[in-house]
Length: 368
Image (cartoon, rainbow, N blue to C red):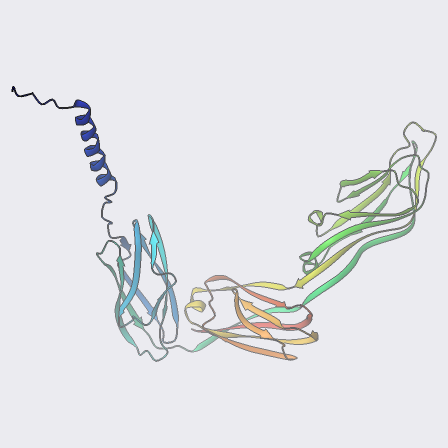
């Protein structure tokens, strides 16, 4: 029996080649290049500080890493805290660091390192050298905020009102009515909830529309007969200074007539509810911040309703919460974060309390 020649199926060969190619591509696509260690700047940090003081500083990492871990080593390992640790990063990352020198640290040089370990496995380091110098005499900065009130307010204010007025318009004369309020106080303006215009019409000629404008914007243009007219106002349209203009439209084709309205009373009022707080800024220099030791807030309470607590905060950190005494004085320590440039102090209350404060002072203590 003659041998039958073996034929290779060309389609099967092509299919096999395709499978091999896909397998190779899968290996290439799922094999990621190894991560490179980050570039670190600076590589040396030198700081001069006093016992019991703190310093803030930063360093920068460059790279793409799935995990970065930071650790301080050496003599200053317990002095350093990282604002953020154990993170991933892309391209660039600035790390904020706080150095707190212990009160008992003696004069001299202290050395350590910041170790940057990452998913790249190879560590990078930053050398840290701290020179501790002796304390200098304590200096103070006294900042006055004057007299003011803080309260939780709820109520209604009539901004302006008039009574027994006539508005009219004919083809030869006209008269309008204006309500003006020169200024809403800042503490009320921030807690406005609603507002309205009330017009009590005694009689109307019926020959045309009544027109009402609020801050130069027309808000009412319709016929109006005897009775009370209430126009609700959009609180977002209020300004510190507001005005209302009430006038009569022309009599139209009845040119021989006068469109008129007898107004018994007209008023603009607002409702408010919320905390009337006080927010002040104060500036500190680099010297005052680097040597910061703490401070004090003091004032005298002229009048109060101590049904709830007062709150005092510096840079969003709580300094005091409670019912203050008439002659109030509270200290705070260097654990309160302050910064070079503008800082903020905030006075507020919880619902149900009001305080009239006199001679409000903030004292900042620092090493000169």
